[in-house]
Length: 286
Ligand code: F3S
Image (tube, rainbow, N blue to C red):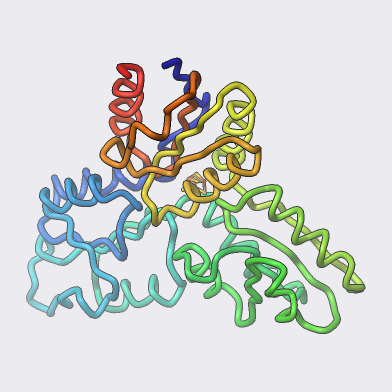
């Protein structure tokens, strides 16, 4: 079977940075807690857990240091690349934890932009998945943010006024454009649109679309909880190519390639290189 890899796939610089920070911390410090899973990849999470990283969903799960706690025993709280709400950052500092903030710079840009646009008098519309941790965090940067994840949410928009539209960093360019186009028809006096989709995500999408023209089956690798992997797979399906979103080789079935000659492989921003390499080697061996 012929296999072609997407030119852009796998870890982005934001995820790489967060993992490097986690590796460094578990080697240097004793009590390291990550607020939420560091990335949507079970193998990476389990490897870091074996080295001592503890995953918590709430700061209440981290034991607060007392006045006599030695400096090297103060728990460290690591913020992952998706970021968190500003009040969570304040609470980490108030409780006396050691803070390491690995929020991706592009997520920080989105957080700051939402705060600024609100201050400038815009009604902020955030296009994204309301259940995604990045969106939950960004919503904390302005007192009022409307989250829209498709045409069914347009009824939530304010009836009139000045809107500012931004999007989740990992959203699909085409979907963001479509929602902006629909909002443009609703008669607002002003709509300011800022493209906050990160270039890493956009390049993965462009490279997957390009690959879909050359193959008769596509494999998009990454966790089933990874938003950007899911978006990438959906984008490939829309190009009319049979597409499978698989976590790794263990989910592969020979039926997927039966009667096919050329397979394409892409991967989301939280998929480690070894999962991609193993998959390609095994696929080539068919
Ligand atoms: Fe950052 Fe883009 Fe990755 S926002 S975490 S570089 S997908």
